[in-house]
Image 1 (tube, rainbow, N blue to C red):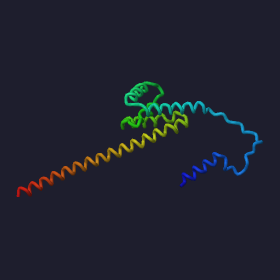
Image 2: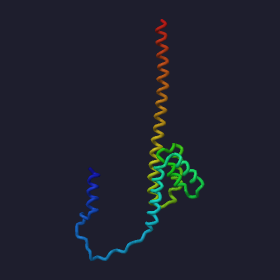
Image 3: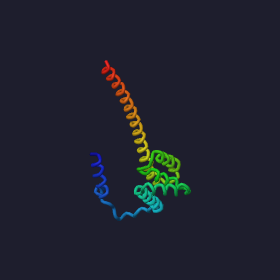
Image 4: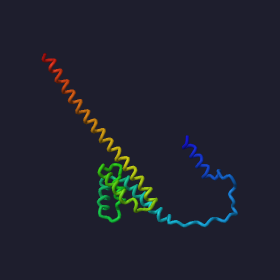
Amino acid sequence: MNKAWYGAALALMLSGCTLPFPFPFNQQPEPKVELNLPNESTQLKAWLDLSDRVSDSNDHQRQQALAQLKNAPHAELKRAVWLSHPKASYSQRQQAQQLFQQHLASVSTAEQQLLSVYQGYNQEILQQQRQLADRQQQINNLTQKLKELASIDQQINDRKFQE
């Protein structure tokens, strides 16, 4: 219900219907503060383009990109993005997390926000992989115990049959 209310309020605000009074057109426009948004937006677009290439890549392409970025200066965050591919191994994800932690502070705030999404995604996948490994270990332990119980049961049945 809250999402619906927020959506409706946002739609009203964007349409201008929430203004309690008419907008004065004779007022002098406020001077605009110029920001370096084009540069920042091109950087963000470059990160999104890289993200697109990473998500569409196959194993061979990822290995090539990682090999090229290994020796490139100031490419640690790009390597981290490549290492956080959905099909990346556990150790690659851990490397990506280390690279994010070490180098995320060196980029702009907008880039930090974008790349922190990768870092959060990576952290969630790492946590799921740990849980999966723990559950697999539990399954293996229970399977071993079942085999032991089956062996004991077989021994009991053999003794009963011999008597």
